[in-house]
Length: 347
Image 1 (cartoon, rainbow, N blue to C red):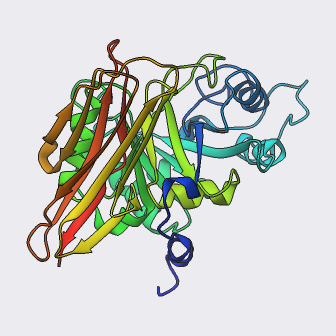
Image 2: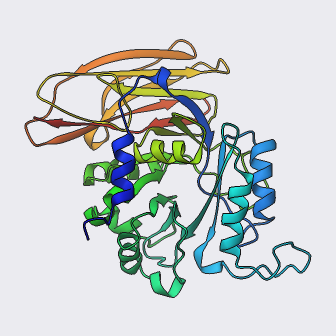
C-alpha cells in the first residue's frame, strides 16, 4: 500500500540538521505503570506526580496490554469506561504545551521467550490474543503504520529469554522502531548488538515505575526537541535525537559534521565527530568513551572535572558500508549516560 507509512515519511521530511543551540533539552520517560495493570495509583496521579514531584518535562503511562479492562472503581469519574480510552483522555487533558507533555502508551510482553516492547503514537490497541506471539505482534506493528515501538529492559527479561531472537533485524518495522531501553550496564552490549545488526535505534532511560514514584528514579531520557509539544517530541523520537542516562545531571550532546546524534552521514570524506558532556552538578566525570561498530573504543578520556568537549576526525567506511559511533559517559559512582548513534555510510 503506497500510503502505508505516510505518517513516518511526513515527519521525517520535517527533520532538519541543526546545531545543539537550535534545540532545547527535555527530560522524561516513555515507560511507567499504574493500577490499570500491575502498578499502583491512577494515570491522573502518575502524570501529576511526574510533573509536580518528579519535575520532568514529559511522561508516559504504558500499562500492560493484556491487563487493560474497564475502570472498576465505582468512585472514579471514569467508572465503567475502557481503561485505554481513559489513559488517552487523561493524557490529552494533562498536556500543556511548553510546560508538560503527557503521553498514552502501552507495553506488549506476552511472548516470554522474547521480551517486552512499548507502543506509542497510536489510538489502536489490539486484543492481546491477536498479538500473543512475537511474530503476530510484529505483523500487527507493520499493519499499524502510525505505531512507534521500542525494546524494553533487554538484558533483564529473565532466564531463557532470547532477547528478540538476539536482536534480529526486522526491516519491515525498522522505520517504526526507534529506541532500546538502556538502564543498566548489561543493557549496553545489547544496544551495541542491535546497532551491529542494522537497527537504527537510540538508547532510552526507563523508570518502569510500579510504585507511586513516577519521575523520581534515577533513569531518565534526555531529548533534544524543537519544542515541548507532543509533535515536537515525536519528531525528536523519529530523528533518534536523544540519550539514556542514570543521572539527570549529565547533559550529553553528540554530532557529526554539525549534524545531531541520530543522523546518518553519507560521504567519501573524513567526518568530524564532536562530543560535549557536562555534569551540571559539578561531579567530576570518571571516563568518556567514543565507541564505534562492534562496541570498540575509538578513544577514551578521563576528564579532570565535570565537563569535556572533544572533536575527533574519523574516516568513512568503504562505499556502501555503514559504521556507527556513540558516546559513553561514566561517573565515579557507576552512573552513566550513552548517546544515540551517528551512522556514517561510505559513498
